[in-house]
Image 1 (tube, rainbow, N blue to C red):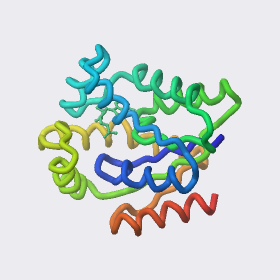
Image 2 (tube, rainbow, N blue to C red):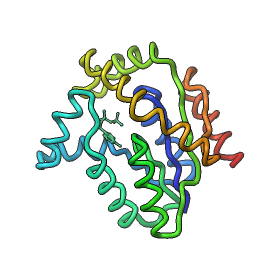
Image 3 (cartoon, rainbow, N blue to C red):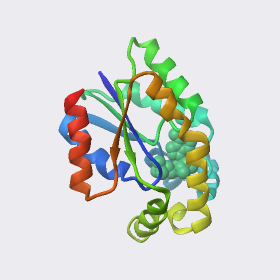
Image 4 (spheres, protein in one colour):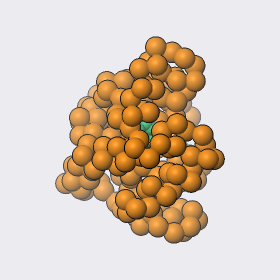
Length: 190
Ligand code: AMP
C-alpha cells in the first residue's frame, strides 16, 4: 500500500490537486479538514469542539485527527494507497503516523509538497471563501493565524521528512494544470 502525504501551506491547492492525484494513482483521498467539516455539519460533539478551534485558525488536538486517520486506514478497501491531505500537521502527528503504519508493517511512501509564498496564501484563500463558503476562509484574522500556525507547527515537518529522504517539493505558483503535471512528474519518478 502507498501512503503519500500532500503537504503545503493553507491555500496551496492541496484539495484541488488531491482529486487529480487520487484519480490517476487510484488513491483514497483523506482530508482531515473535510472529515472535521463533516463532523461539524452533522452537529456531533467532536464537531462542536472542532468548530471553535477551526474558526480561530488553531489546530484541533492531535489525538482527534490521529484517530480519524487510523480508522480510515482500517475501513477503506480496494485502493492502491492513501493520499493524506492536511495530515500530519505537527511533528507529533508525523510521529504518530509512523507508529500507526509501523504496526501494520507499512511506511510513508513520499511527501509531495506544494509551495507558495505567504502573500499568495491570503489572496488564494480570500478568493476561495466566496466559492466554498468556509467560515475560516472569510476572516482575515483567522487566515493570518492559520499562516502563523503553519509556520510554527507544520513547517518543521519539512526537516523531519527531508532527513528521512521522503520530501519532494514542487512550485505551487502557476495554473492548476501546470502544478498538477509537476506533481505527476514527481510521483512517476519515484
Ligand atoms: P484544512 O481543510 O486542511 O485547511 O483544515 C481546516 C482546519 O481544520 C485547520 O485550520 C485546522 O483547524 C483543522 N485541521 C485539519 N487538519 C488538521 C490536523 N491534521 N491537525 C489539527 N487540526 C487540523
